[in-house]
Length: 212
Image (cartoon, rainbow, N blue to C red; front, side, top):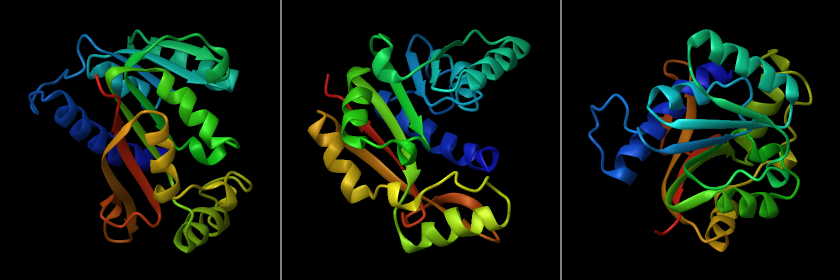
């Protein structure tokens, strides 16, 4: 499922990068000279494209086995990516130009504290990208009940009650000193698959900036 979702998220991220830094939309490495942090990096599904876009990338994940797999894959691809295992609050990582946190918030108990910690890793003038499922009837049906029934995700992967709506997330970002810039839904249709959409009911992705 994440492999199907990743190209959709990458399109939004690239558009957000070009909008935020005013770069050349045809540039192959718009993140050259910039640092990037991917929180909840898993096996490096986003870290590797960010490195190819020119960023100096750090990936953090709470699961050591994910970090080991990510590091092995990056080595095999000839990519220089720093991977660390642990909780974000316990790692003194400094600040980054770009911070990404995709499909992580739904697994976090204290979302307010986590958003504050995320914001603390973002440098002045930096860009944050967050994606997460919405807490809606559609997400309960498709992302929890339907996905588990079809075997697309293991049972117990998602707890619908832990999902957060855009209306709940955006005030947390503002309280942490960030300004929400763009928001898009990630929808699904049998004829289109996963795609960026104005409908945020199922899943959504947003950018937020820290004023310089």
